[in-house]
Length: 190
Ligand code: AMP
Image (cartoon, rainbow, N blue to C red; front, side, top):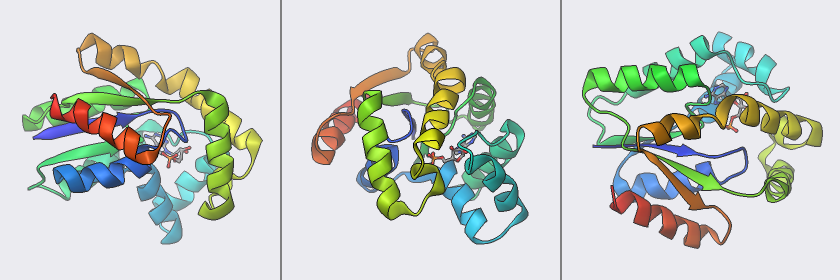
């Protein structure tokens, strides 16, 4: 069983790459951002709450996010493994994920980080905003706030997984195929 945390700042290409990897390795892809967006579309209470944070580029509170993530994992009792995309984003989330998966006897195999310089990330996000319809991709101030959230709350998780010898850094600049190739090499080495 392979449980992979696909990590990186907004715009690093996590969602794009997860789409390929889930097919290649028969893994369940859980994007917490997508689950929130589906809840917003469905007008659920969770969606309404999440929207108030997401529209500003702030992180949704841990408790809500962690409970939601656990529910998503539990929907797939026969999964061969998971790709976590956009989760964990804080230390509490990382600890909760470890506790949850370790109790199931299926720990995280690796945290694979897509490394991309910030200026390229801004360009990618603004470009995506032209077609994604995501309010948080269309405004440079919101994008900067998302980076700030990443720098202050999320980037530290590199240390968390390094301490467990599970961190793998990947160059996230290049064509989609080149990056998929780098990721495959990393995953095949696990
Ligand atoms: P993403 O689709 O991963 O870029 O996430 C979009 C937005 O959803 C983020 O800016 C947060 O507001 C929210 N979000 C997604 N995942 C998380 C998470 N693990 N913790 C807190 N907020 C999250």
